[in-house]
Length: 201
Image: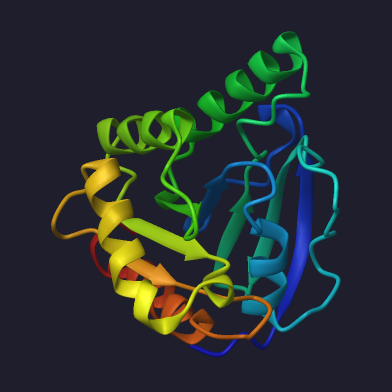
């Protein structure tokens, strides 16, 4: 799939601010600083579509990006940033909960995990949450440029094991810096949308 058109259509903090629930959506979830914004810019070929910050925990809203007038990528707030207050963290959690549990067009949540490190307790908790709601199945291993090719398969196997991921789950290594893996990810997103268009709509 080639992205010919990508635009931000809503920046939201409440459900009443969401765009109409009238097309398939794929959400991106991951720890703060895992590289969600960089990945979004890589996928869409737009350098500044999603704002990249060196400060973790910067995305405090749910951001909706419309792709090719066909589906949306939804950027969820990063989780697990220690310097965020407990009340702020709970607020983000409630905001994500509401979106994940009520959005009818949501097909799958791509969970982003830094390929260099073991999934954290929060990563595991998020995976189990997504699995419970039938939204798991796509794991994006970011920052693949930071490890050698020899380590790649080993790290992906470690992520699968630590998450206790389903054998059918897809794990894709991606590097925004080296611009690798995004075509495979776009292809996977395309398959998800096609399935929705054929079986759900």
